[in-house]
Length: 402
Image (tube, rainbow, N blue to C red; front, side, top):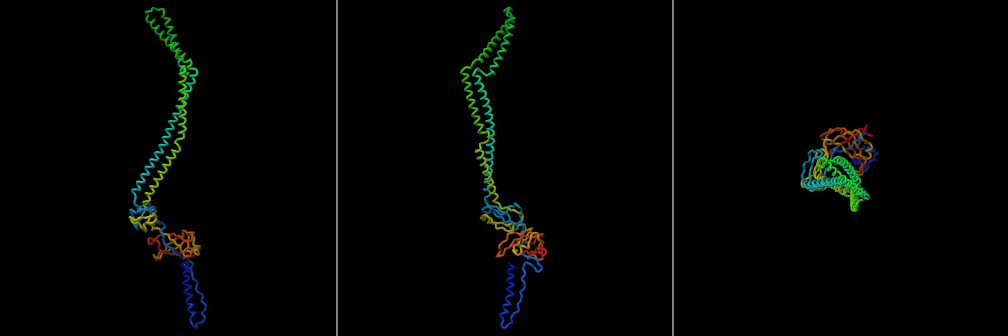
């Protein structure tokens, strides 16, 4: 744009004297004069490319509160240095938000405990039902076996076998006692040994008779009452087993899916509420996201602020780069990344710093009719006198021009 204005002014200065000369009376016809070539303002006679830019901190951010509120405290002022994470300002409502966080955290603990209890209780219930199922299975088998014996005997086989063994032992004891008695039977009735042998013989005979009677009784067909009792026991055992089976089907896969899902949903919601409450607490603080200097701030204590309204600019003023959008589409083709440049400053006479074309943004912008491109120049050296937005002159030597 500056080049176009320069060319127009040069042409006007050349054309006006010619018109005045032509208008003088009696003057001879003027000899045609070839106007001088107007050179681009960005290039010197030697082919150097010169353009303007401004100094910008490599790292700079504009910070504002992410929520609406009333500014409570301001901890820094313009010119102060901050580190990443330093608190710049805070909105009102801290205690209220802390209470919300505490309540949300309690709900998370409660929901987690309920979820854990559901699983733990389900595991305990599963073990109990599994034990009950095994016990009822055993009882059912025993009742079925007992009822089966009642079809032809009064008792289970092991009772009969025991009674038979008792009878054999009693019979053997009786035979021994009988043999001893027969040896003493002819003795005098007043002989104490004879009396002792008779006593043992009588006791052994009675015990043998009782054992024989018990054994024979067990071999007989059972009474109808015994059959009915065994049938009733079998029905009860079967019912208990079937109930245990149903209970097992309910718990064998762990907690009820619906109950577990409800507990999980409650826990997830509690965690989301806690996260939201913690985020709300964090949103009350405006924190520095980079280390640097507070360059500008429009924060005021007690001020009502909306999202993005109140802002603070933080920048690292020790590291600058040069940005320019002074290059039109006619010149940008001469610029490539990696080119060496020299940078001087209008406000710092005599200071010339080496630099490098670091980036050429590929998307041009319409700037008052001209399409211009933004170029970023990295300074190889820094100077403490450089200030933000200082005008810089960038020069590319002819051997660097593409």
